[in-house]
Every structure is written in C-alpha cells, then in structure tokens.
Length: 205
Image (cartoon, rainbow, N blue to C red; front, top):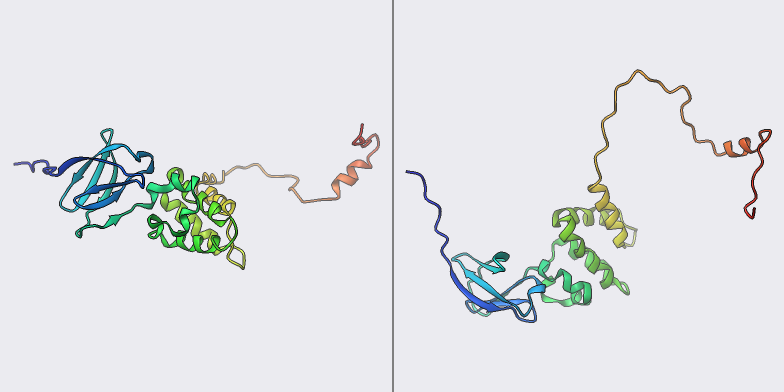
C-alpha cells in the first residue's frame, strides 16, 4: 500500500502580536515580522516547532522552546524596524544572534559616529539579495577593507553587485583579425589637434 500523507498534527490558537513583535505560545514568546505588530495571528504548536500563520500564509517558523518564560527571536523579522531605529542594533535582544560576519561588521561600524545608521543598511539588503549572498559580500568586503578595518555600505553593495553580475560570455572563435590593435595613447589628442584644418572650439563659445 502507498504511504499515506503524514498527519499534520498541531494545537492551534489565536494570539495578538505584541508591540515588540512577539507572540505568546505555551508560556514562551516567539518573534514575527514587525509589520504584524498589533494584529491577530494563528499560532500552531507542534511537538518540535512553532509556526505562526497570518492571512493563510506562514510568516514565522521557530524551533519549539522546551523551558517556560523564554523568548526566541529571528533577527530578520526586525529588519524594517532598524531602518527607522538603527540604534536598536547596539544592544537590541533580537540582534545578539546575528551571523558572525555581520557581528564583525557591526563591531567595526559601531565604533564610529553614525555607524549604526550605516550598519542598518546592510540587513536591508537581505530581503532582495538573500542572506547567503549578503554574508559572502560582507566577508569579502571585510577581507579587502582598509588597514583600519573600516568597511562602507558602498563597498558591500559593490561586492554584492559583482557576485550577482552576469557571467562574461565565452570568446567566439573567428577568422577575423585586428589590423590595428588598440593601444593606450594619451598623446593622440594633441596630435589630432595639430592636424591641418582642425581648430579647437573654446569652452565659452
């Protein structure tokens, strides 16, 4: 006989998302995307994990906490929040579990004035570029940063753009040959200017 579909067994309850983007489930709290603050959601308690559903769509999935009175965060749920309040990156509880590359970048940037605003722009790249790509870009930017270890957001964006760039097409085999190979010649402009009948137009003409 064919194997039947596994039974999707869970205990479902309605709960309101707190102002800190947390939902209480079985005496523990779990984070949800911050845009759901104040809304009613459905919590589904499984033996090993907790799923939160809003508008018939799963918006969060956490490993179930075994103790009571604990809180489990997903820092990506708070990305839009740090765009408005970048200071939360300094000591906010959701950001204690940032990946190691982002932790290193944060330690370096927060030593500078306005570094929290710069750091807030890096997680904002995750929803569009993907977490893995951003982590690779941050690692490469840290490796090639200045001797002081300073890395700018532009540096990370440039590395990310190179990672996502379209691969160079393969060389085409052809019988055509270049008769005059291109040579960098900064004096060519002066020679062209001295040709008969050539007159340079003034900038104020």
